[in-house]
Structure formats: structure tokens, C-alpha cells
Length: 421
Image (tube, rainbow, N blue to C red; front, side, top):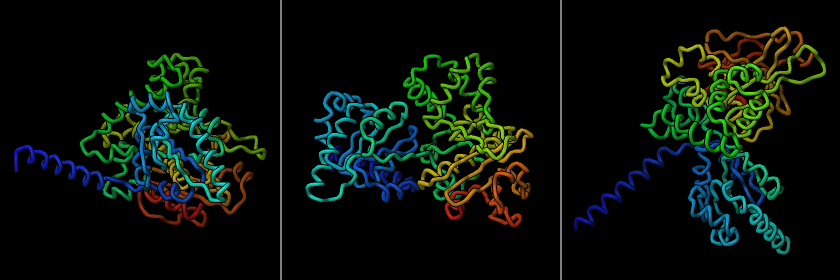
């Protein structure tokens, strides 16, 4: 065998080893089952922040062609001649980061309508031909609403849920999950530190994709507001307070919060609204979707120091919120999430409402400190007994605390709610 052949053989072995390594790191995503079962329209858009695993998920489907619009050459072709670009893609196809080529949307609409007319003549059922991904909701919303309404399923993909992490990495501690958050790359690349990943993520996605695409020019002030928001995760939000500390007017702060919410960096949970009580405070509670990002913005880089910090309680409550939202979206549930606070400062962390049940959820980091809790008098006016109550803890086993209350560790929260909500 020649030296060149040996070198080629060595490269092949390295490539094969990389393939085996990557296949071992593939984490089963809960949303994949829903994608296989619920796709009845001709297009599917999988939306989520950058690096949550959208492309990896769709790569597991049997698609004939793929186009990645992060490639500037492909992006230019898609924009300049969308008909020719799509003609060169055998169907079903994947188009990654489709928001970079908005001219594709009218052409996809045209092709879908052509196929619908052909299917009517043949009396055959339609199928999904276009699998799209996007990471910038600000750029996507207009195109989806104008061009693909009634033709496209929209699914949200988040980073790993606790349920997914526990299934794939059962040896990991909760303190590690809090610092790492849910982005797949932090788990599948052993030598990648959360600090480096989130530093890059803040610069690349939040400041570039989110801020730049939304026309935000005051990046320094935007970053200051972002850090102030991270310090308030798990708290009722006061825009006036943030505005004063950042030196930015309230209208601008509210606009920035809305942009971050639109792009799934954070969310605002509304207080439960009812006419049965005038004692309810109509404030919203702020949560980040990812505890790793939130912890980095707070300045954390060591899981033990984070675990012993004053922020750990709020970060754990943020993780519970994230698990509720991710389980809802991964399994296409109709759950609505609310919080509760009266003028007397009686609070319930979360109220989960489905079409069948109302579940009251309190969050306690300590396992032994989990006790049954009573609803306040205003809540008893609004909600009828018997009550379904959960205390979510950092560990332990599922256990009845009294006739109405269960203790559920966060590691089992998603699976428990899928059975009981």
C-alpha cells in the first residue's frame, strides 16, 4: 500500500470514528414523535433559537435533499431565483434557516397550490414536502402569515428538557443541569465549557440575530438590560425599575423584552385573570427559557458556587418553568401557564390549566422542606375543590404529602404531567 493510500485509509478511519462518536451522542428528542404523527400539511416549519437541535432533529427524517442557507452562495441563489433553487431540490426537502431567503416563501406557496390542484384531480391525499427551519421569529412571522397560512405546520423546538437530559445522561446532577442549561452542544461536546459556549451564544445569536434583526442599535444598553433581566428571573417584573437602573426609557425596555420573548430567550407568565376576585395583582412573572444562559448572564461559571449562591432558588424555579413549557411544546399539549399573587402577597408559583384539570404547583429546592400547602381565601373563591397540588423538588421520589398534594422531583415532572394533566 502506498503512502498516499495509507494516508487516505487513516483519514477514512478518522471519519468513521467521528461518525460512530456522533451516533453515540444523538439524543432522542420528544418532539420527533409528534412530527411523525401530526404532519398533514404540505410544509412544516420547525422554529427555535439557534443551536437547539432543529437540523439534527429533521436529519432523522427520510428527506431526499437538504439546503443550508447559512451558506452565502446558496442563500444568494435562493433569493435571486427561488424557482430554479427549489427545482433543484428533490422532494421532500429540508431548507435550513429559511428566514434568510424570504423570496422562497411565495414560490413554496405556488408549488404547494399546484400540488393541491393536482391532488384534487387525482383524488389523492397531500403529504409534507417542505421541511423548513428558522431561528429568528421576528423575520419569520410575516412570511409565514402572508404566504404559508393554512399550508404550514408550525412547531417549536427548545433545548433539552430535564426529561430528555435524564434519559440520555442519567448520571448528571441537578447542579450540573442548572449551569449547563439545555443547549445540546453543551452536553454532546465533552471539552466545551458552558462559559465559552454561552459567551459565544450571547454575541452570535442574541446580539447579532435578535438585536440586529430587530433594529436595536444600542447594544451596550441592550446587554445591560439583558443582565438586569437575568437577575430577576423568577420574579414579578417591574419595567420602571429596570429602566431606571439601565438608563433606558420604559418604552424601549418593554420593546426589548418583547423581542426577547418573541425569540424564546425569556417568557412572561401572566397572573390568572378572573372577575371573581378583585384582590389579584395583575403583574407578570419573568422567566428565562434556559438556566445555563441565565446563569452565565448572572456571572456564574462554577456549578458548586452557583448551587450555594443566593440565586439558586430562582434558577431552580426557572428550570421548573422551562420544564413545564418544554413538555407542553414537545408533546403538543394545550396547557396554559399562569401565576398567582394577591394584594396581600399570597402567591402560587404556577397554575397549569388543561382542558380537563387545574393543577397548582409550588417549587421547593429542598426535598425535606416540601410540605402540603393551602390555597389562600381568594383562590378558594375562584377555584372549586377538590384541588390538585404539586410540590416540585430537586430530587427524591414521587410521594403523597396529603390527600390533595403530591411531591414530584423535577426529574420526573414531565412524565408525571403527561399522565395526570
